[in-house]
Image (tube, rainbow, N blue to C red; front, side, top):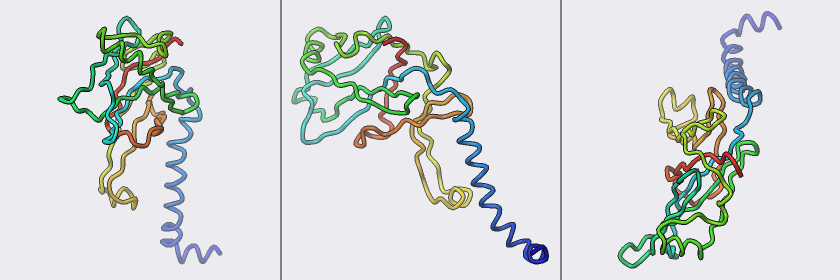
Length: 195
């Protein structure tokens, strides 16, 4: 066996190198995440959904005023003819899940009349709008790969790594809980610091 390894050293190195690279990538990505503390604060964000068959009754937007989430709305009339609707989402880094916060259409109608309202669903939330969460995480936008360095080490052309919460070398990918929202349409609102 020893002689065979000496005679076929190039073959042994050629077979061992990919395995070594896989182990190194595993250690570099999994170990920091398992040793770190996950995000302790939920992140609020909105996504955009396009539905050409059902245009929403109101065009809504979210803003934070005095650490409270406010909704502004205007009637989606014929001159606007907007088929995009915003969805309010929250990402929990402890469980690595995304949930949609359903909004009451009647209250959104009230926002259209008064300019802005605090919704029943979010009235107890205290929201911090800093880019960095109180525990040090930031939202990292998608990074797109190319076909360089031999196709991303044989992986091929372009890919999108998606949105992540990052702190140092640790990253938590935000799952795509709404498959029909458009990539790049995630809009950061803030961190839920009190519920």
